[in-house]
Image (cartoon, rainbow over all chains, first blue to last red; front, side, top):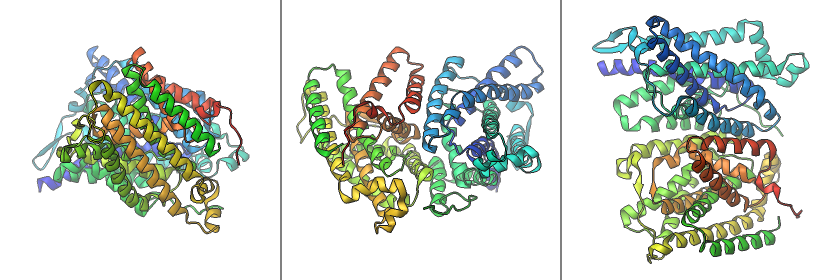
Length: 298
Length: 311
């Protein structure tokens, strides 16, 4: 019984984390049709800035409860500065090219940013475990979990709801939907498509950095942190359907639960099973669960 | 480029490699051998690119070939380079014939992502397989050729010469394949696959065949890399390895079947120079090189050479 309970709780926590990590990726693909490999870099940069700023805040004797604010704000700020520089300075010159070229462009940027991270933060690990334990813990049956994990689930739900409301209830969101549907026609109707690309890319980067920041207290922040996240978020987004918000939620839930079941019952299959699910979903729904079929064009 | 001209250039390049290989320092011999191995994988990517398909999981077959070579040593106690390549090609051929049934249905970004998922499955399996060394990987037995063990001084050179000959054979075979009626349908699929079907050809079958060819080339490359380096681990199937191959293929451009080998050599040189000059920023150097190629040389390094128009 306890094991079933812990499978459910672990699955929920891991799904929440996956959803936050994958949200930005699906947003950027949905709007710009870019498979954005720099997503992993923003994740790593978010984790590093959160770890170093929060560490400095706590070392300087700042209020421990405010460390959550420092954690989030520092990561978001760095992404807010960096993402527009990359989009305006580089990516926009590639929009006229093939999807694959854009992907390679972001891959090149990913290689560059990996080393930038090493130059800025060095190669030694950072630890900031304080925020993880600060909120105390709760128990499920005989199992004890840090409350921080509930925070993660809360952020995932809030981010999902906020993004949905933003897209469907605000003027900017409706214009964005128009841009997603047909960028050329939107341009003809007087929408500044470039601004929406900039906004979507920046928002995607902020979400990635946020995911990194929220993960930082639970792991040791080391070089190469973003590399695994890229493929994991890919699998989540591809299972759900590239560019689909509900798809990302469902994908996160599926991967989260599958991983949690496998960790508890067949740990040797943990990594393998995630990509197996991705391959199986693609085999039956080539464009993912939530994507509409596209007619072949002659 | 005409088949005859490609053959002549390939022959000259092979002679240069065989002669030059005698005199160059050991590190360059090693670099060239690895470049031949990686060039084979990149050639596999070029075969697919020609039909408009980019695989982000070609490392699947590279790694499979390497592990087939290792298995030969572990279970049959053989380090024969030729046997290793045969085993690798056979394993990859069978795997690709089966997986191709699925993969050949996909186009565009989904072809790439499905290949990626498949290579990550192999990675996940290898990481947890104790019998094959798990994350530590396994060592490859010292190379032998037709059962003969070259002396230490000649070992590096004989592997390089073998790799060069294999690359030469692959270049000729692929060039020949490109000029068969079936091979000529590759670019036609990229241009418009529905027209190809109206002509009565099965697009899926063609893509399946190209997929198997690419897999076999990559596996042979993997076996060569394994015997050259002497050690393999699951990272050979990780997505970053596939990324390297895509890098090489794009750097080279798909103007010729020779381009992937040039690309692999240039990649190796950039990589090792950057690593020597500054161990902490070699990835940055590679990234900048890739960006420059994408922005300034959209058709790759091969477009720097004068092209002769051919029918």
